[in-house]
Image (cartoon, rainbow, N blue to C red):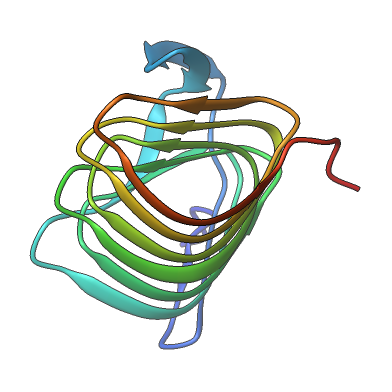
Length: 136
């Protein structure tokens, strides 16, 4: 059975369907994969569609689509994704968002941000650097 999901200790890939919902300010695809609360993953995550992380993740995340980091998530990663929406939780690392990046309270971000479009909500804790320019 090949459902587009490959999961081992170092790499996870997921392929998704069409756009469906609206989360935050950016239109995003229907959530097609979820790393829920109480779960942890370490390694490299590559995906198509929309992935939400509510648990713990350490490693790197690469996609041409949307990543949602939920309230209570603990992410330590190098993130290179088209759209990133941080709904809460803690992110340590660098985020490169080719389309847009949103940080919503009560998120905590430690690291560098690089995106042509940036939204930071009142109440977000941000410690790092920010570059608003196209991501090559």
